[in-house]
Length: 268
Image (cartoon, rainbow, N blue to C red):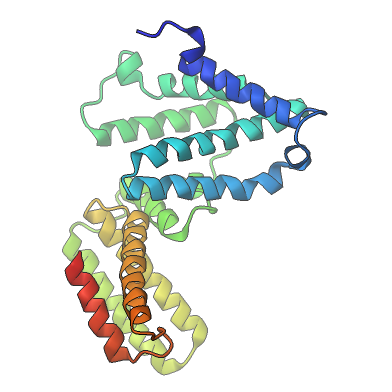
């Protein structure tokens, strides 16, 4: 067993904190020193999606690397906050440790929760109690769902929230019936030639599709990401085969591309 104190997770995390502080110091890196909260935000989103890509690919070696990049973003934000006297990374660690213990009384306390559903309901009750004690105004059931989420993810989360208080369909068949209803409304919107109405009806269809995914316990965002990856893979095969014959996708006929698309499907 390795007893080297520098090999512990805590020591390695502290090294990351120290490296970030040095990069931001007067003798550090010019690029790192000129960054601020707004300029770093896009990297946080980018690194998050790279983590998701690694998970989708089941590339565990790359996932370890991408998680390191994601942790760097948290340390970067905390370092900038420390420099302006707002908080330190220790405060963030204290906050999440205390929150996990506080919101899992069935593990660290004397309450019980036998199912995942019970855990979620208990979590929401504790969150509501925390907001009340902090004097935070409760704006509504859906106010805790960030508007900055990808639209599919946001739709699924707000639908889940509404379902928890009983605002929901009873069966998947009812949701599928709603999809047929929305498709009919889209057909009517096409006849009206109103772009705004078409956009609204398409949004309604997407929202219903998200609810179908929810009923089948599928994350709609991840399902679409998987389909996007599949399309990329198949289209890449199509382009490669066309290139081997000296033809570009722009030059190929639809029949040629469809035949290669079916070949790509059979290869999987």
